[in-house]
Image (cartoon, rainbow, N blue to C red; front, side):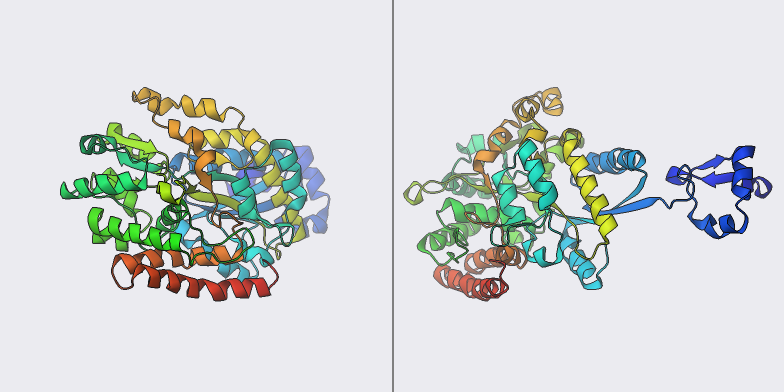
Length: 465
């Protein structure tokens, strides 16, 4: 616009300009010097009030359409309705813990901070959300695995609010497993099929590196063998015969059905390997299947979703899988009170309107407050993409996800010690030490116990467990 007319315009919402009427202009001009001193803070239509701002940190979602919906539809719509500028920043999920530590150290950061893995070790730095979580529970209920990831029964504090969690099913090449004569319904059948398929250069792909996917799937194996890292009383239970048996199994799986490449895998490796046809079996959220569908990958009809395998019958034959992601928002204690209130309002409104988020995530995220998506079973059964591709039952195993999914720290809570054990990759390292013969299984389990003991002692001393 020309400079000689700019004095008749003001900035309004979303960085747009509106031309003042002559009456409006004269009214503003009449305020004289006072108006001039306030001009940097003018924001029409609230005229003299500075527009509020809410900053949110999100991970870069594995379903690109979700970020598109949240950033360009939901957040701006909520912002306009509440006269708030909503700023959403995205970072890769692997950077989330370090960025959180940096914000805490600086005593400055985002008003809402989203985590995707247990973050109970940050409880001392977070706002208590009891005032918004408990009314939401009364209205919508809460999944137990979500509660065990964001609530501390010792301090009685809801240190985060979880909007959703992500199932972690197996993905397998049905055509190859059919030819080998197996279904991956037990860890024994995975090993037997894996031996045959490794000979055909399509091995099993279970990561043994320091990455989030290995952290989850190796806990699946641990639990299915009747072992655990802790019990319900926050006592370390890793040092058990059942853990040793699970370590022996993983060593056999590594030697007989996998390749050394899995030792250096990161969180993207199993996705890429499955989509390239380089492996026959992996564990991940349905981002693999969705990516294959979007890319019109020739392997799409052959990539099948399956529930986690059960363990040996002699050890109880359990079938358990860790949630792949636990999405949880925190509000820092050092956040100014007015922005804390604004952040809580955003979360409550988001939960009261979470149905569209489930659709935008394309079955990737499941509600932590279950009654926010009352028709979830129907949506799973009638997934439009799978139906269009002639695989209407492709995502059917997700319908039973609550029966086989649990939280990190099972059978207890994802407490501060468990969060630190998770973030330092003690469990993947335990399995890798034995798989590569650097330690015998019994010694590897003892090593893990020695790493965990001071962590538990430290957090108990701080009164958080």
